[in-house]
Length: 189
Image (cartoon, rainbow, N blue to C red):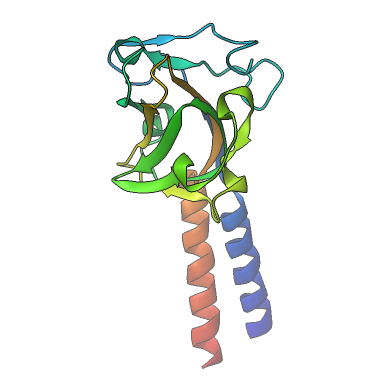
């Protein structure tokens, strides 16, 4: 009987761990960026997102920083705030010109200056080719994209990704699984 209880607890725990809602997010003018505009500089200048992992996302530029060396601007990914709960980012693709930092709650998750990425504006970059683990974004936190114009021309950024967000029912199922494991362990003692 205790083996059956333990097995049932493990099954419920596994189901709870596996069940999560996928939430896609991508750059758009709906994200907070004062003075920003969409860019149509694709083709010979910036990578065209159509048909790539960035498909559907938009290049965002801060026009006030054009031709201003070392000017920077920040954009917040707003789609993640709509969930109101912790999220694990399990995919994130970017393209940017000139340098990019990705932060959340003051912690730098990715800094392009740590890697030698040649002409990042002409390619789609998988951030997880460079960082060691998925990002955990707290429900009250945001994903920030910090862009710096190093070359005294126009600069921009585009991104697209996916998160795993636990559903409320999943959390309840997880609680049942943990309770079942605790009950099975207590009965065996």
